[in-house]
Image 1: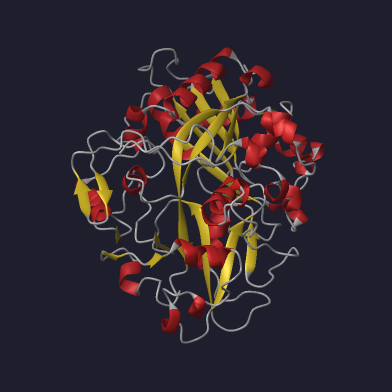
Image 2: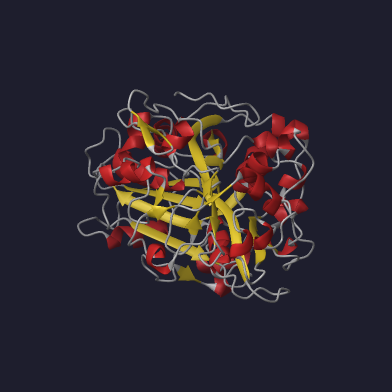
Length: 486
């Protein structure tokens, strides 16, 4: 069994009544963060035996970030999550610690790289900085650019491991040309291991399994003229009709045709300050960035040649900022009051896996909210199949790790399992029905299959006789039309 013994002892001692000699079963995941939340919750429920409605707060969850890079406000996507099995799930021994190490910085590209080079290693978390369950900033000991040095690994026990699971926001064949990190103008965030772009034959040779469907959302700064929420609504205290942008307007923004908010038809004269648009895009190699390109430019599917606007240097140019993680995109959108190279009023826009927050505004697209119901009804189109690859045959995984990996990947295709974690209250369903934005009542079923007894939503009307059993199916090809179940 591949145990990180120091980490096992430290974590085991954290749990009351658990011996420091308890076995730790480690699972290493690299790639898109699309499945991270589901894997963590499913680990707690389906492996450790916790209740889906009350996942234990005693589970260990730690994230690390690199304060030496420009994205100091965001997480580079290194997380550790563990739970202790209570013995109620067959095959998973009581008292054992099941630990998920998830490395998602730079997105899906790591999953692709690991598929082509199975021996590729990724970092686990630091084990001796004593930060407990909080987010840790450890400038001296964290080296994403060089993907860890042997000296620092030895000194700070930040182990390197082959990945047991490789994840992707979209199918691997799309990670070519501009969609590989070597096209990224900010070379400081490209580890040397990703410097060489894969060939078309290598990409075509990667086999994956379709997992859950993932919905993406467009977010804007709360100060965006005519689009952002008022102060009262930004706190989630009041429901309101969410602002909407058309697909054509978003396409024009993302491709650099609109650079001021007063050029956007939905904003127009509401922008009295000639507010400049700051495009907070993901970096090359990000699956969510490919999802944006698929939806709004169609470059990957041969629709046209107008790619999403990019930077020409490591800094900001013409209001475009590239970000190595989705959290950095959110921070970019929220923090555009002052942008290097721009003067005057600015307001940001970006694309992330669907989420809602008082700190930014998630806009409707063509009048429809980003939620599972509208995707299932075929009305909200920015949704794509997540993919994953079982890499345990190459990672040297133990039998225990293989059992966990098999369970996690299977559960990510099961409606009943996904419904446990993304069920919706009556209030959330009502919010979906009216396309309302409210931090406290937005639909929770946002990244998975939908419960069989919940109604689809078209505009403000429930379709009571149609239920989104599965959001859609593209058969693993993002360029094909969605086959909806409604």
